[in-house]
Amino acid sequence: MIPVFDGHNDALLRLRREGLHGAEDRFIHGSPQGHVDLPKARAGGLVGGLCAVYAPSAPDATGDFPPLDRAEALDVTLSQVALLRRIEAASAGGLTVCTSVSAIRAAMGRNSFAAVLHLEGAEAVDPDLDLLHVLHGAGLRTIGPVWARQTIFAHGVPFRFPSSADIGPGLTAEGEAFVRLCNRLKIMLDLSHLNEAGFWDVARLSDAPLVASHSNVHAICPHSRNLSDRQLDAIAATGGLVGINFGVRFLDPEGCRNPDLALEAMVRHIDHIVERVGIAHVALGSDFDGTLVPTAIGDATGLPRLFDALAAAGYSDAEQRQIGVENWLSVLERTWPSDPS
Image 1 (cartoon, rainbow, N blue to C red):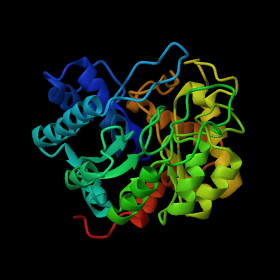
Image 2 (image 1 turned 45 degrees about the vertical axis):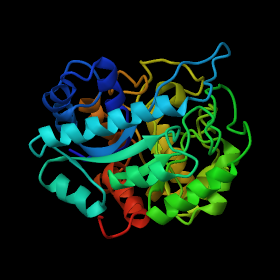
Image 3 (image 1 turned 90 degrees about the vertical axis):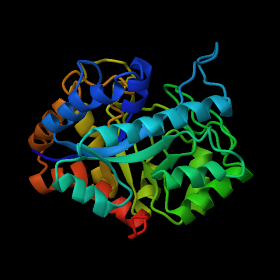
Image 4 (image 1 turned 90 degrees about the horizontal axis):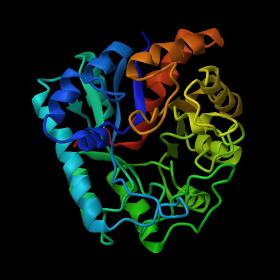
């Protein structure tokens, strides 16, 4: 079985929505609900990944998402960070929160789910960036400055099809300071959900590999959430990568929410990135528990079926392992300090 280190899951949000009472047990021992828990991960070869902390909100009458109140975002953020730490404490070694690649590899070696604390949308972060220091101390190692909303740092791209991501202005002055501090703290910046102007501002300012943890190819599926070929080129030029999003509406060329979408659609996005910029720059970013995925995968237990499709398309075992795990570990190793503190 090919091991998978996944660039994005929303299991913490799902568990919180289901109810915090018993959430640790549901993740550790398994539940009929959801895409990711420890039994499903072990069955599908999911060895770890970026576990998102995300504050949800409702769209307005136009379907877009207005800015989120910072106090509300802070409550949800702290709740989900605490939940991840409680799962770690209760799991008897079944899950480890990791802050270095050596820790990820060590967790994989003892069959412990290697969880990386990720913040999707920085609504909770204050203008002085004090919370960023606090969360870093709690284990935060990857962050997206936006979801599909405006923050004080940047503009998230709204969900539109067909559409480019060229919607709205670039980083604010606070956003530029945010990028510089993330670089200094060695927190990976995640460009998924960021609009195009913001993307190019980060590309200009950041000294780290550019990463879009859960995005796809705009040339195949012209959704606003997907990346142009020019953006793919920029990511590759820095040694970064794209994690393929399993969401059907970001895969389907017609933008349809069709759960019967064949896995060959995912392979097509992978093929495009490999042919455009090379296999070192593509990995997986499932968006498990945060989007509608193909029935052919279903949940984490279905990951081997994706690798069967990759094998049928001519990818060798070594290439599948690159896509599954090694490309992510490579970019994190080049982004984070060698010291796990």
